[in-house]
Image (cartoon, rainbow, N blue to C red; front, side, top):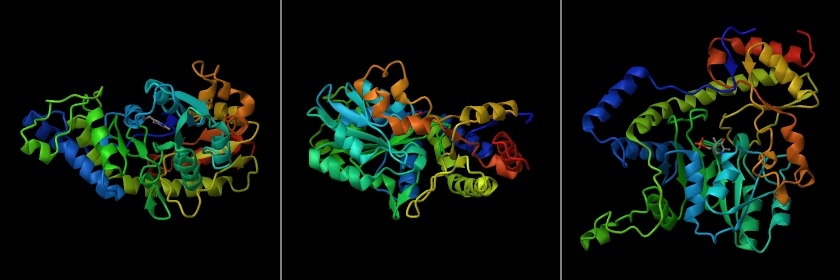
Length: 384
Ligand SMILES: *Cc1c(COP(=O)(O)O)cnc(C)c1O
């Protein structure tokens, strides 16, 4: 049994003295929020890191999703097709944006099944909110085709897919808008935080305004005409701004992300080797053309997932059953027709088997990963 609990993940922490130095700079500047210097630097540094042209920081990923949906200007109560195999924030954001979630089943990729999406389309469907769950990309080509055919907007929840690339291209290239989460539990964190990435300049401007109460963004042309920011509020925006202290935190942890991914890659290798001879545990394989974000290490255990989970708990290893129960089984969604169990059979099967194992560099550096492997093997009924 471990003395201190082992969790599924632990946050990256910045170097303390570098953090205090930058905190002190922000303190002295008296500019604490409202797209300040640190905010601008973090946006720039994220663009460089992700090799993208534009990013809009938001104060958390959930609000980023809501703002993304709002930016698309869909008619009230439009249906948005989404996956039940995700965190609560995904369907919640649809409802907070005044729209209706419709659940469709996933396939072996753990992400939305294109056929199930197409079958769920009705005359009031206007968008698809798909999730690159655990960093496994959705079938972005098939979803793109469906979106074109039925004139639907596409938003990707890439909370787990920080820096993921498909055939070398940033995953944020797909769809109309992609959301990133920088919550403390995510690979890259700014304590709380998130962002939206999109190519359309119109959408970028709209997002800029929506996160700042709807105050109109003043282009240099308008400025020449003497129009000042704050003169016009044409939209019901919200306060989605990230403050300067969190931007500092993000700037510093960003520098550690690549190394953390390498170390987590080594942990993944150790897990794979440790369980390679056990038929009851299945480890999903990232396709060769995709870079792995290393957000989570999900495994699927047939039949005895809860038993294994409980044995690990007795050893003070606190794993997470992400994503069990399914969002469609939450009290607030269970009554939806699309939440019917036979509509979501693959999602139910995976949710009943999934377990996210401890996955952060500390367990490699202190070598506890080997003990964790041994305990998991024991829990699966294997000796030695
Ligand atoms: C974490 C997460 C979110 C929400 O992000 P926050 O920054 O915590 O608001 C949304 N979707 C998924 C799949 C997540 O894991």
